[in-house]
Image 1 (tube, rainbow, N blue to C red):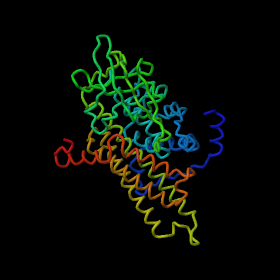
Image 2: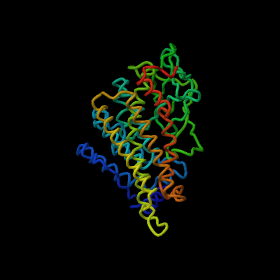
Image 3: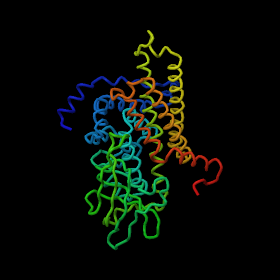
Image 4: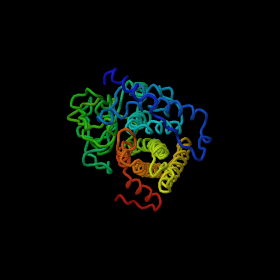
Amino acid sequence: MENSKLEDLFEANQNKDKFQAPDFYVLDELLTEEHILIRNSVREWVKKELSPIIEYYAQRSEFPRHIVKKLGEIGAFGPQLPVEYGCGGMDYITYGIIMQELERCDSGIRSTASVQGSLVMYPIFKFGSEEQKKHYLPKLASGEMLGCFGLTEPDHGSNPEGMQTHFTDEGDHYLLNGSKMWISNAPFADIAIVWAKNEKGKVQGLIVERGFDGFTTPETHNKWSLRASATGELVFQNVKVPKKNLLPNVEGLKGPLTCLNSARFGISWGVIGAAMDCYDTAKRYSLERIQFNKPIGGFQLQQKKLAEMLTEITKAQLLAWRLGVLMNNGKATPAQISMAKRNNVENALIIARESRQMLGGMGISGEFSIMRHMMNLESVITYEGTHDIHLLILGMEITGLNAFN
């Protein structure tokens, strides 16, 4: 977009974002001063930089590429990774808070940040060589580079073990073939962390750079959800990948699934932001909209909706905070992460739907954020483990019996 158009949008929508976060159980007392300082800083940045333009980009199904470096500047990329690699060196609660504030504006923007931090930077940090860490992580942290994560395939979503993307050892390089789909950041990514099977059928990770011959990233169009996020495919046709680009320290599905645990943690916090925005919008509207000679907030059914929304937001906040403590202590299990992701996304979607109803016809208008949140959350409840898959993960944890086989 031209700078003049951006300036016009900022001018027209300045101070339009009047969001106030609910904190019914005074959970701020569980946070450190640093947590609150970072949260308030990101919240103000969102109000100033994202809120004035998000509807414009969502309506046009366009990704605001200019914000990538700005997200790097505010520390949204890999804030929980070490300072020595150009990252924030902060804890998991800080990471969650940043995701919450970004998704309060839009799930697609949070997706951009969480993919970069948890699905691109984290595997390089966790499973990469020292050379890979020093080369890629500072550039990814600053937003100089954008990355994506290639696991899902056209015929293999919830069953990644069936993936067909594969590579062979050709002596001085690997030869990669296959495809991935529904990949956030793909159309503009500088690198892709691609999970593929080696000649023994074991899954390994490769760093595939834009510009490698045979590597293309066609964009996915006609989305009704995550319209301000770039989605695409990864196609590999005899792509020569240098051997130094193999992630050397992991083999098997443990690699991608470990990364997904980090990303799912971020989602469990992020969707609270979307839920809070819907609640705040509905509450504000209920006090301003007059019907039958009084604000609609004075009617019992509307108060019931608001009371239930606030209750579920508070429960989600407590769940996410406790999970953050467990993550910081290295004690969080995949099943605990699944519970938080599943519960918080489901209730955020219910809150979005109830909020939309409270606004009546205005609820579908781009003048308000609710319908956009609602459409976005329909994707969030599916990606990085569907709602039902997380239920089965919990079921297996409870019974010890594997329902996937």
